[in-house]
Length: 488
Image (cartoon, rainbow, N blue to C red; front, side, top):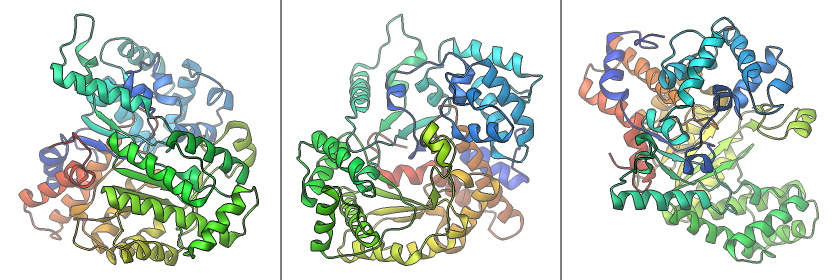
């Protein structure tokens, strides 16, 4: 993993070194805790920073025979770190092997391979740096050139940490952010990244469990100042929260769906389904789909009115180990790739919004790589010239964010769409040490485009292709999302 890692020819190395390497990062989809950014949280050990909440690593450790009490049994310490170090040599060929060593190098300057033998020295070296200045949560983002992050937030969330951080950044900007003698330079708010929320209304659509859904509606209504008792009330509550999020810089909604929703029904059917679910009745499958589709269409209209992008994630099977889900809860490493998506409901959903002139910018993701051509060809039917790359084939995601998966996504987009308009990589991560994944993606991108040059499949025009690589690395995301304060 030297300077030419994943860059197998001179064209690839030139594209990366001159155009991609130093581009800023706009991480438009992550699960970082907003409170940690707002307060520049510190981490006591590398185990806490690296292993806490990272279900990618947890899955690998379980597969290596590590006991659960070292994984999710409490605050991770040296025993958990050592178990991870013992796992690393078994991960050759897995992106975790690459990411782990990129993270050690980029954040801590550690160049040794992690294993049981090197674990004690690496543990001490990383912890010593974490204890010093410049290693808070914001500082770690700053080290990687992160310009902005979009966290993932429920519509009922108060967004108190976003509000406080935005006010502090604004104050620092006005004052010139003059730190007093007690503040380390890396801790200055003005040097931290922009943080904005993302609107994730999944719980508002979760009508399968009427009791939990009704309890959530009370929470949503309280946040919005609306008593939610009818279908029109939930739409009003979501609209008010959508406006509130917009005021804090939000420019994206995000939706986790097993399959596309495209069951279009009359308003009377939707309202009747809402009333039944509100009374605690279990809806028939058709009623559930009609109500969920109607609510998602409403959010799509809101996104279009405010110029947002709508992110639709498909084909994830979540919490499929029922015993572990009951014991450990969601997002602990028991999800998997689902079946290929049903294309017709997606087409119906997009067409319904387009027919009204209310189709927002849309990013289509699938956890199943077999869906890439379906998504790329479908989105081409709804490009309308109003926005460059208005519909996007989302980045290779979760179980696909490895060399092969990213290559498949990049080539599918290039074959059926416009690679040059792609908004690029995201981390989808809960870890502040995950941002070398952007470097990983950029190296893969440059390796592919550089390979085309070497093979005579693309012109050796480094000005044009360099601009394309830079655009995919950062510029396109900046121009597409228009996050307030994110400039060139």
